[in-house]
Image (cartoon, rainbow, N blue to C red; front, side):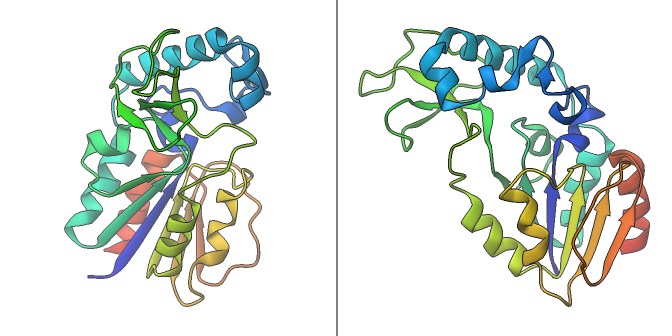
Length: 226
């Protein structure tokens, strides 16, 4: 089976009602993102950071996978599919995708604030001050914040560099290092980019752009692949 990698951003989950950061002028609801999504923010005000991510959890819990998520999952019928996502929701998994790599973490997990290898599945339960890891230190969201390394990037590079087909959905390709993944696909591979916005991309061979929102674009793409 041909190897197909799907790289998704906030745009695929927007149609499920999950707000996107890039559409909010640096504010996510009433929060300035730099006050809740940096190591400095955690040091300064862990209560505010936990409040923010507990609200994200509630939002994700109430959301459902949309048609785009479902169509990505159905690609496994005909391809060897790997999903790489910048999203911290679990909608790909709930839609049925079986191999999902979360570049920026996921809201259903917590980790130790001192040992990044101590990761716990907490589901949609809130993380509160006083919730501690087995070493006795405060739990934090298992999220990659601005200014932190992205541990799964090397694995993402490996997957993309071996892809026969690369599909990019709902990302501005502005957030690095993830934005550079398109450059790692083999020259001969087929590449598709689905997004309703104007996306600046480097000169890329075999790239087809579908200027539609995720659900509409995925329906068009499935026809192309067939």
